[in-house]
Length: 319
Image (cartoon, rainbow, N blue to C red; front, side, top):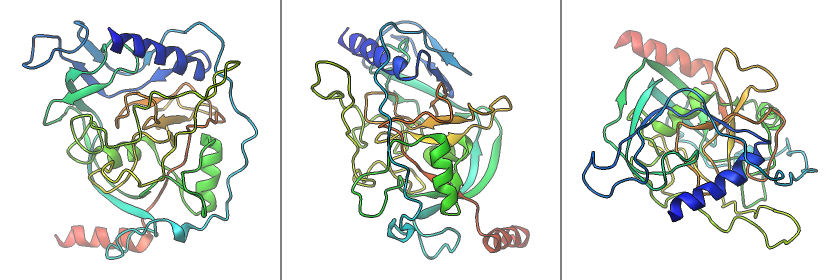
């Protein structure tokens, strides 16, 4: 009962934050009904099949006040100050890691135990079935991604008040680009298709599940700034070594759907410090490309250097 009440409270906050509606795009996820498995039964008896877009009903009440006037990001930020990737690989710039392997486009994630009523839009899953089955095509992928969320030189926490538009320009200023949704998913899930970057069970390894969300202000709702330094949650790491992919700050990516056109080309991935789903596959797609918020940061991707790509092709032919 408490889980459902708290979940409804979050929905009333998050939906207005999306300016009236929020659209989620989870992977195929099956909520197993109570009694079907041993151990504690999940809250709610309905079988939930998440496919395509799930639309969340509008919530009443005035929208949470949106904070404006955030400064433009510094394009002169020192990239060399970011953590180093493996120098032995020779594939990616400093501060980035090489993601290489076969990515499943449609994993089947089966939740065996829910923390919240699975009918709620931001329900959290405690334990997923292992192993994950791939019900779609696998595609070969090889690219670079920032190991950590972008943090300007001299700052202690990741940059925020970003948008798809701002983040795109910031990444371009460093000869990088925003990740596609597919690239982001693979860097988070890995070839074993983990629902969470660190595994199959939800654990307190990332900056998430904070309940002290608001400042003490009787006149309006103002989110607390609860960002943590990038990389400070060392166990919040994917199989590729990418850190903080869930929790801390949302990360804009480029949607690859045929109908995704300006000004709705973006998705926000990973969630932030609120008690949300905070797993790899879901995405928030209600915001336009210019939406910015206290909880939105930046992570960039990059193509492999041409020489590295040629070396990989040559190695493949030799093998």
